[in-house]
Amino acid sequence: MQFKSQAVAKPYFIAAIGLFVGQILFGLILGLQYVIGDFLFPAIPFNVARMVHTNLLIVWLLFGFMGGAYYMIPEESETELFSPKLALILFWTFLVAGALTIVGYLAVPYATLAELTGNNILETMGREFLEQPLPTKLGIVVVALGFLFNLTMTVLKGKKTAISLVLLIGLWGLAVFFLFSFYNPVNVVLDKFFWWWTVHLWVEGVWELILGSFLAFVLIKTTGVDREVIEKWLYVIVTLTLITGIIGTGHHYFWIGTPEYWQWWGSIFSALEPIPFFAMTVFAFNMVNRRRREHPNKAAVLWALGTGVMAFLGAGVWGFLHTLAPVNYYTHGTQITAAHGHMAFYGAYAMVNLMMISYAMPILRGRAANGNKSQVLEMWSFWLMTTAIVFITLFLTAAGILQVWLQRVSDAPLPFMVAQEKIALFYWMREWAGVIFLIGLIVYIASFFVGGDERETAK
Picture (cartoon, one colour):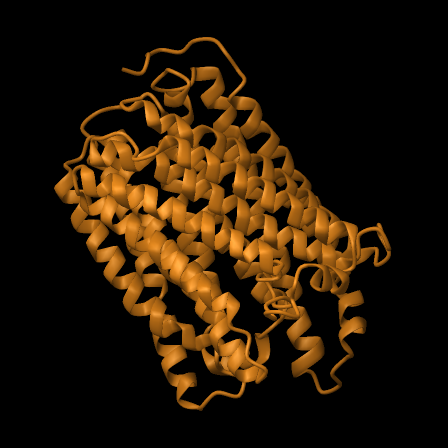
């Protein structure tokens, strides 16, 4: 560890993994509720389980991004973090606010939670992925501003690199586009139009800049390839991301009452969105093939390569499968969307966080890499989780294709719930794949507790 203040990343990483476990547990509860409708009802209704599952996804990814940034920026800037104390204060603020929000979801009906938290003052609740009560949203803004202030001041007083600047642009974009979660117009078309300015422009816009900067940082450290080469790749990826991702927002506007030209704009530019993910895959493999040294942390390199491949498959290929307006007309809102979402989030963002944790945590604990036994276990976790998510995606894709046929294409379309009963077999298969995923995550955590043959001490 080059700088003492990098240590503030450690609690962020630990919290991220803990919340990740919670997300997967609620995912398994949801999976059972698909096939056993009254499972845990009325204690945890389906809508609450889904809300907790998706909110934990967002929060643990944000904790991972923040931890990764706190680890990376001092090293890139070649200076200590502006205020380690502020970073720790914001950590506890965010963790407590997130925990109280989840308790609120589980303890009281959502409508009651809205009344108790001032939703009548500024109506922001009741929107998918942005269900957080007003105090939580305000807390997120405060934490984000404090976090960005800390990082920006660190960069300003130290060295400026392309990687740190791309990361800052991504993080500032994350904060700016979150502000649209406070805008909740009465008109449903306007509501959905601007809702995507947070949801889409996060995951298919500024988050990709964070992904690219993390990937570039770890590849520089583990391959020894010249920084100039990696930065050129990063510029290309960032350009492709912003060109395709911003206008590609239009693929969400096909059927919500917006003008017809969005069917063309959305189809064309979202069809181009796989390109930056393909570039990222080529980038990762190219840098590893050109490596000038063998880094002792083989597991982190595996996560880096896996991120490129799985992000391209999940966000790129599975996104393209249903992004063209004539296809989306039939597939919109089906399990094909869920298949794309699961693999895309895992490949693009879960894996890049796991990569950063895999690379940074051994160094934060005083060694360049975990021992051989630990890394073998971690690689097992990689293959268990990755294989499981592939099967989850395939099962949901099969369910989605059958759902489209039964509900929307056949000569005698079936009601929604009748169609759901007929595809229940795929839900059971998805559930078992989810259990394998949880086992893989437990193995990942366990790998950090395996001691033994550390070959090299971090300098």
